Structure formats: structure tokens, C-alpha cells
Image (tube, rainbow, N blue to C red; front, side):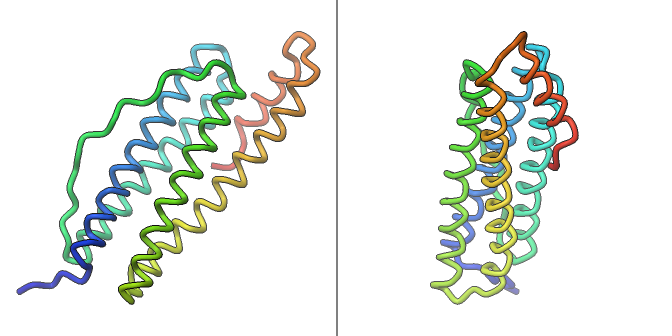
Length: 170
């Protein structure tokens, strides 16, 4: 009995997004390791937390595909990009990744709307909300970084920012 309740096109798009979430996790893992070895453990902790969140997103999509009668395809992911040159560069690159991810989530929601696939449309709203939160969070951190990095006196401001990020929301 065929119980597939998503289109082939949607299944492919969701599988692509699942792989993208795995890649995002890889990026966060790499970017978390970099400040960790450069004595910014708070920033590393913050980024490791986001790595876990991206993996949860990947699993959430995998489960959704399978629950709707599709078949999740586990594919290879690209290597993470080169280490950033500094914390500002790291944050800017993370924001760019999140903005690009938001555009891809929009494609899923748009297709769901076109196909009148209301279950997937509803499912996609979780990710739309999540991306709004992520972009807002990273933008706020970039704002704080810009404020703290204009007056560097023995890296005190960066040290305080690093401590703040240890307890920042995930």
C-alpha cells in the first residue's frame, strides 16, 4: 500500500535541506573548534550548542520525510570552510550561512503552499520561526561584538563578550 503523502519534488527538497542542516552542523562544529583552541571557550561553547541544534533540525526533517511516507536519503556533506580570520569574520560567516539557510527553508514553504501540502507547510513554519530567531540572535551578537571590539584594552571587552556567550540562549 502506497502511503506517501508528500510529492516527489517535496521529498527531494526536504532531503536536500536535511543534508544542508548536516552541513550547517559541520560548519558550527568547525567554527566552534577554532575559538576553542584560541582561548575563547565561551564562544566555542555557544557554537557547539548551535552545532547540536543543527543536528536536531537534520533529524527532525529525516523523521518528517519518513513519517510522511517518503524516504530520507543520507548523503555525504561537504567539508566545513576554512577557519575564519577572527571572531568578527566568524560571526559574519555564520550570519551568511543562516541567511542562506533561511532562503532554502522559504523554498520548502513556498512549494508546500503551491502544492497545497498543508502538513508540510505547517512543518515548515517551525523552521521559518527558527531562522528568524537565529538571524536575530547572530545579528545581536555581531552588534555586541562591534561595540566591544572598538575599544580593545588588553582584550578585556572580548573576554567579557566571551563570558556572556557562555550563557547565551541556544
